Length: 338
Image (cartoon, rainbow, N blue to C red; front, side, top):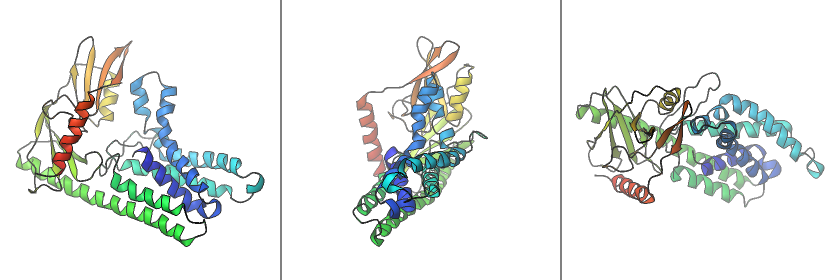
């Protein structure tokens, strides 16, 4: 999920393990631990010269179970050595720091698994991307109550029972909301599955996921032999089904490339690609909604691919700011229901 959410969750882990011993500093160290996996964005930039490799590195090894275990010992030992000095000597134990960083790292990757982006939990043994698709990568209803609880507990002394109460409230409210999104996901899957059947769409597979910043408006995509069908359904819709599907060509090019295969894996096969000028290509990840409803090529997650020696490289597609404003406005109107 987004960085703020991971910071808040990491801070809660820090409070749970070391809050009574070191007070608000535990929140800081937990927040650091909750941030570490997302530093793979910077690590990938250092490791790779190709932007496709760099993108695919995100939510890879540094989001794996193995990294959580190894990182717990590495960062736990490092921060213990940095903290356990002078007047703070023997106020904490090494095992406290190992547990703190394991929880912060592990809860980070588990939380990311609930989003549509996907997380490679089992790297380097398996490249399967775990994606439950039940919550958006940023959802204020999950984050804000949790954040408020963490901020409130900071004003109580480290041994105060109210501090523990606010920690439990933060974890409890966010967990209940997450459970709601899981149940809502099952409901939305049934809505889209039935809707595709009633629309006589001969799909081979489909997926549904919430649109950004909410769990009310959902986006569904079904794959057929030659096309994709995309549509929306809101919890505020009067009907129990949706029929506002748009057909998107399953545009494939006779382009043989390991890099394109890697992008297809990244998109779980939900993509299309169009040839442009000067040996460049417009690649759309169809797991995410359209930017312009009238333009079947204008998806939110789009890339410009170009030849780079004997490989493909990429640069992000940069639509006009007004297009994003229009897209968000359209999603908001659709969220209200029809």
